[in-house]
Length: 417
Image (cartoon, rainbow, N blue to C red; front, side):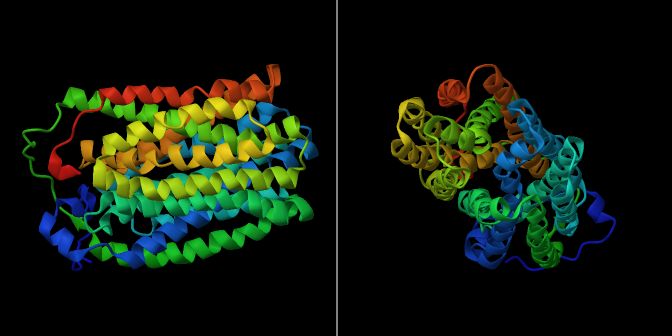
């Protein structure tokens, strides 16, 4: 770890420069701060476990309150829109003024959101509860991604993958916990998961104590562009392409997270608990793929990983709507492994394109791109109401074809890989 740096109140108002401004040799010799990476990844696990719980209890909410698919999609939208709207704002603010303890404070929003969801008996209250959980996510992601990079020791793809692994594995746990706890004990049992939020608050407070002296805050000096760096126009095009690529990936994953349970119940007649376990299989594969994508990007280049991970999933997504129950499980594992490996490479690629707007870029990609996925989930719910859930998966099967846009990504300077 870097030596602590004393930071005054005055300097904390200036833009925050994370560890990638340090000399490369110093970063390599320091190596990753594994304890911090483990802590922030575990916090990501807890955060996303609570997030995925919302989608996992959709069947219960649908039956209890006679909701249609469009209303289910609106719950996803309420959660995603809050996170989407605020994450870039939070990231932009923390670029200028670091907030070491904001993570634990933001997690308190998730804590109260879960308590409200457990007691909600009106559709509007359910929407507010989902929005509160989304608010906690908005505060969590930009600054925790910065901490992961700060603790990376220069292995940015690896650190991002460790960070993403916690989130992806947490997402996969939601359906299992819903099947084991919420389905047998009802909506009120969601309150039990507030204890997870409390644990996350404690861990994030401790990480904040590590993070505070690591911050190097100073006024920006004009930077000399690398001679091989892409132009500002190419950077803008590349960022738009990366948003589109992450959107295609996230919308497909969101379609499975929100509606895969209903698809399995409708097509194969399985029980809700069985369908939740099948969803867990997909999300667990998604978590594993997220871990391997970052180190592969460090080793072979992020652009190559982006090409392979998105387009590589296309044959399997096209086959999924026509497969049987067990074949669907196998295909979902393959799709999860391939398509999720792109997330770390896309985010690190974007961070390297705009290196001194780290929080804002992280917020845009964690927030806007994921939020667009939430908006797409609402649209897919409306489509399912007017057609069928099977038709939705036939349409979504073509989403990975958007990966062809990767041809417009520039080649980054060699030292940035």
